Length: 261
Image (cartoon, rainbow, N blue to C red; front, side, top):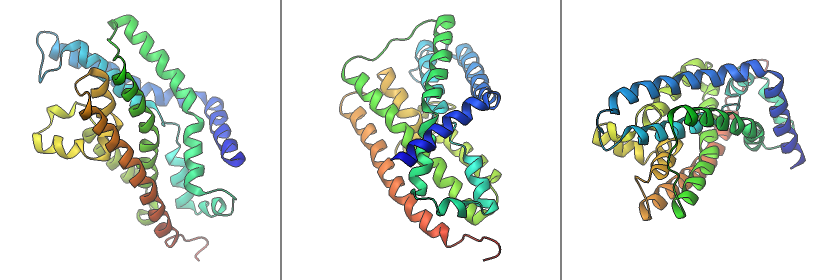
């Protein structure tokens, strides 16, 4: 465990050292939040649409912002470049599991992200008004959903980055992942606004657990057994992707080329 803790600390130190890059990335997500708040306020201020009122949508967007910000210091570009340059071979000789090491790095910057989220959400609530918190069991399920979101998001980014072993390029993979995740997770619009068939597919996909599931539980739009089922789906996808990623990693190693060999 000592090696993984060292990797986590190194990630946090790097994020604090390159504060401008960190704040620049946060600024991009913040601009999206402000734009979505402005657009949805105009749409919903007069009357609800698909059951969403303006206060509910504001709360939904804040949860989406928090979900989109965690695990953003993962450094998928760093991992991708090491794969493309062949430097990943140096990672293979270290006495740590590659997948667990990358997960430790993702967790290393989590506390910084939580502080930034708290600051942004606090300012937003002070300007736009408060939100109603879920109570009792719903609050516990929301907390569980947000915790499961961390490994789920890591695994989706991790597996997509492993595609570099086959594509020899990362930008296309990243843009494709962002497009799919933003649409099917409910980050841009709630899934209820999608065509019914697509919303159903998205709800049972791993992507819904990145935004839609915690947001719907927070708003109380799902509760009881239905909310518990959605959290169970999140957990199921975490387990499936964790072990699936290990199979992808084994296949990827057969594609590794270093100095022509």
